[in-house]
Length: 90
Image 1 (cartoon, rainbow, N blue to C red):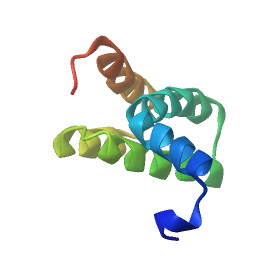
Image 2: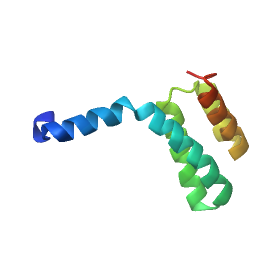
Image 3: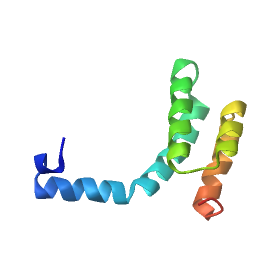
């Protein structure tokens, strides 16, 4: 859909969403840590894929993303979230 297909109000909502996308993704990543601790099987696989996508979008260094994904340990993902919140990661 082109921008012309949205009303001025809708365009404002969309703009604010993308302006705040980084903080939304950071919050979603922290929620995924909890979900990963509590889930198993196929659902857990889906959460890991989502976590990988979010980390890539947040521009986490690729080697760190690979390390987190290879370990499949929610505690290591929690360290990434901690570093994001403290400002240690961009």
